[in-house]
Image (cartoon, rainbow, N blue to C red):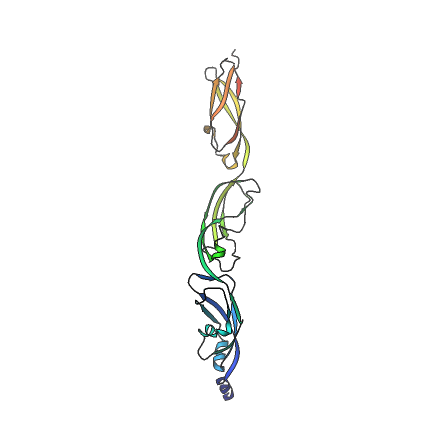
Length: 276
C-alpha cells in the first residue's frame, strides 16, 4: 500500500481525451468544421491523473484573436489548451497538431418558410386555405452561405384527402451546411385542398306568370369540389326576356357564385307553349 502511495506521488505521462468548444471574436464564425475533440499527452502526478480518469473534461478554446483564415499549430499554442486545465497538469503534446480555420463574418436574416406539400400539384388540386406557423424564421451563419439562402423548406408532407382540413406539425429541412443556426426546428400547418369538377345544376323556372309556363334548365359549370354541397338555388338569378317576335323566351343567368367557371346554360331559348 505504501508502494502504491509513493508511486501515485511521482510524475507520470498519460493521454487525456477532451471535448473541444470554440470561442471566436464577436460577429465572426468558422465556415469549416473544427475538431470536436483533442488528445492531450500530459504529465502530472499519479494522483492528478487518477482524478482525471474519473471525469470527462471539456475545453473552450479562446480564438478571439483570430479574425482571418489561418492554420493553427496546436503545439505552438499549448496555452490555449491549458487555460482550463489544473495548474499541476503539463501538456506535452496536442493531437491534432494543426487546425485549419476558415473564418468570416457572421450574418443573420429572416427568410420565409416554404411548406413542402406533395400530392397537390401532381393531382391538379387547388389550395382553398392555408395557415402555418412560423411563416418565417431567423437564420444565422457564415455570410457566404446565408446571403444565398432565400427561403427554408420543410420535410415533405403527402396530402391524400380533399375537402377536409389537414393539419399537423412538420420538421424543417435538416441543416446540411456547417455552422448554420435556425430559430425553429418545426412548423405547424393547416390546409384545405379541393379539385375542380364539372357539375350540372338543374332549375325549374317560371317563364310567364300569366300563363304559368315553366321550364327546366340546366347550368353546366366548373366548380370547386368543396363548394358543391353549400351551393343553393338562392345563389342564382335568371333573366327571362320574351323575344321581339313573341315566339319564346331568351334565358340567361344574371347572378351566380363567383367561384363558378365556364358556365353554360341549356337551353338558352325556350319556345312559347301554345295555349289551348
